[in-house]
Length: 171
Image (tube, rainbow, N blue to C red; front, top):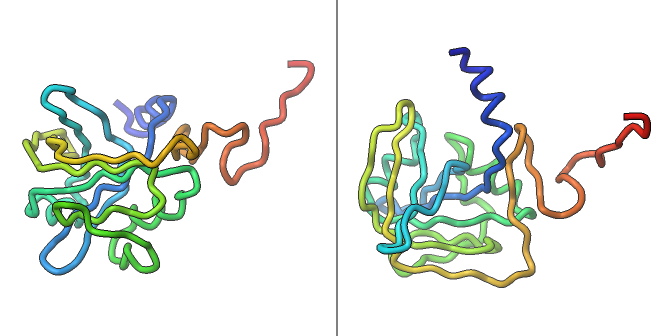
């Protein structure tokens, strides 16, 4: 199967964007993730997929606890920053430690604090399952940051950082 074609077809599925954070030794770590989902209500479980090439994921895994920061549509820059390697991802980012120490990013729509329950093989990714031990949402005012067809979007009327879609009247 052609990987580029596979990626193109999957881009038709809209996903939310989260930043998974943890505390590694003496500093915070984190990664941007669009492969996140609820898994179970009883017990409360969530899951995400981290690339095997990630430098942050092994540190979060060793810590055994992490936070899922559900990003709002005004946090595209945070998403882009936490997708990078070899930079101080927390420079200029406001956060506070959660109950288990994992960073909770300011401005996120919601936070879930988790204990790592299981890790499964997922090809070029690892699938992490976390048991939710704490959560908080911050109200109905925000809109989620979405990823669709390789671009960031919002539930607002216009896509983020893009010209409005113009429809041809003859189409």
